[in-house]
Image (cartoon, rainbow, N blue to C red; front, side, top):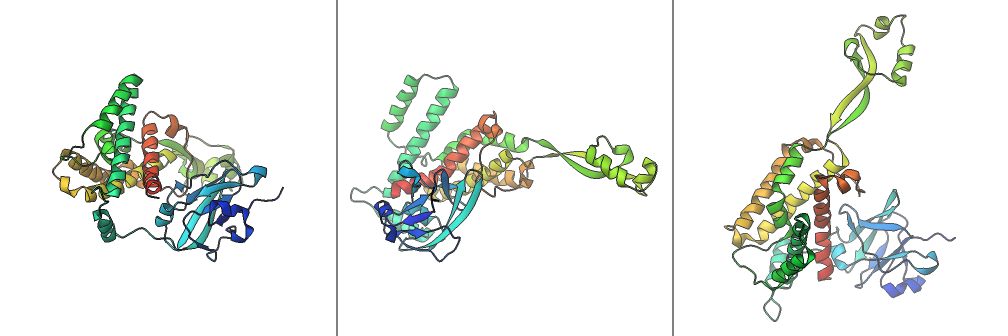
Length: 354
């Protein structure tokens, strides 16, 4: 069977035209792609594509092509805006193996600076509603509905009650005395105690290592330790221990450096950054209770990142697959769900703006 190579096309229908194909298999920056609005990437079947460093997956475009020709992925303009244009770097993952691809884009517009963003948001549509504000309002309504459904389920509520609450949320008038109900606001209002508890008492595991130990402190040895002992000079064990009277033994040390705690640390970092952006956008509500709650949660995240057991946890260096604790653990399951929603929040906004 012919190997499917990764390539990018300027349009979805360009897949049928080999002359418009730009191969991306070699990890080089010499690939130049003209951005014409709707590029697609063809990758081998079973492949996942992510923006390198962002953990944001590229959406699939339909089912795999016939005759095992590969899978198409959309590349919305919003994805390019999150990269260091004109250079775009992608992570291609097939099962447990991953590789990186890069290419140069011509014609794509990068994300605006803060000053430019303020000017863009100040421009009104004909009916006087800001496009960005309108989209964010709908995203916030959906976040509020998801929060209502979550609490109805945890409280044993019935679906009819949940739909009643959804109708009320959709039809109620927007309160101008409070900032918008963003996802970070919901997290700050509902998860402060849980986040603090997990960070101060994170899951801890014991790791077995072999180290030189004094003879009177040895509690456990294995075959490797015994083979090491047999190779040492001397007839008796004290003679083999040498001048320091130390032998190789198994030492069990506790550590918090686990996958779930790495996710927790990254979750706090993302919450801190999102809260900072939220507070900057909602300055006119600085006296409101919701604003102060998010402000306090941002401060809490910074404090936990520097003064809690997870401060020494290693950062996430690649795209991760959730383990059992993240999927089923009573304390970490909610963190994992909210972490995924934070990852997808920017993607949702860019897809709506696209």
